[in-house]
Amino acid sequence: MKIGRNDPCPCGSGLKYKKCCMQAQQQSQENLKELYYKRYKIQLKEEEDIQGIRRAGDLVVQTLDMVQEVIRPGVSTEYINGLVHDFTVQNGAVPAPLGYNGFPKSVCISVNEVICHGIPGEYELREGDIVNVDVTSRLQGYYADASRTFKVGEIGEDASRIVDVAYHSLMQGLDQVRPGNTVGDIGWAIQRFAEKEGCSVVREMVGHGVGFEFHEPPQVPHFGKKGNGIILVPGMVFTVEPMINLGGRELRVLEDNWTAVTRDGSLSAQFEKTVAVRTNGCEVLTPW
Ligand code: MF3
Ligand code: CO
Ligand code: CO
Image 1 (cartoon, rainbow, N blue to C red):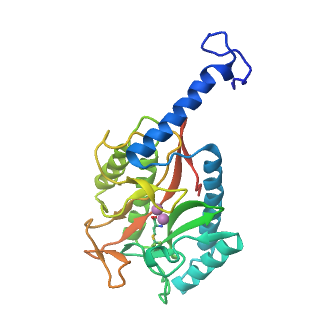
Image 2: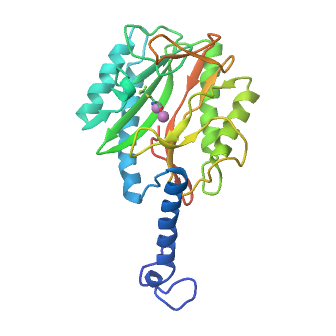
Image 3: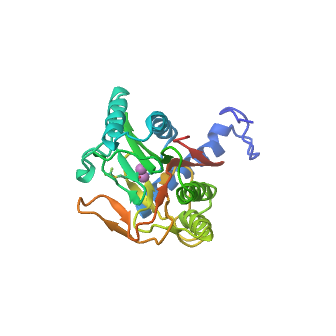
């Protein structure tokens, strides 16, 4: 039930709601905003900001859906880059990766043992590959970031397993997103699940605040201890994006200074969503 501004305040003061606890609630959200910025440089989002990020998120999801339709053996990663670029621009948005810290393309495409930040190019997808496509769009000033790992045709047992474990790792992390839990709870849940499955969690790349910028505070590690780190409060918007390896967790960056691959050559998979902490839990702003 929603309390009207002019209804009697439920605290029993006899004042109108707008003159009493409604103000207190707004005041405390204001204080929290200042506190989180001062302490952590975290910019909590207002309702209208979340709406903007949700719109950007819807576009990112549409883009990933479109990519899914064209994934098949023989398709080059450069071709997928072109599709993502054109679709983003046609929808009035900007592909955030293009030129970001010098990244040369509009989307990250990471095949098999590539953990993340793969640069689209001549490579043609082959039956049995697993391929992560990571899309970030800026729409009307708001950023949303999401990725999925797609299967190319029929894939092997190992590939199938790492894709499943990566997906469920993300879901375990998202289960922890609610006010009062901590950033550490997210990483703890992901690490516990992935390692129980005999896989490993990449440490060097983390989830991140998102919305006003591509990457904002806080960092959201995909490993850690329960109860550690910043307390989640309504208005926080960030990504969770665990990179899970079938072998060891160590990585190596190729000569291009972007492509991160598993050191042992084992398969790696990743799924990413942008989420908002809400008073009642977690809202996914990139709902694929
Ligand atoms: N989309 C990646 C992430 O999830 C970041 C890519 S940075 C880029 O945070 F420059 F490679 F695009
Ligand atoms: Co991200
Ligand atoms: Co991303």
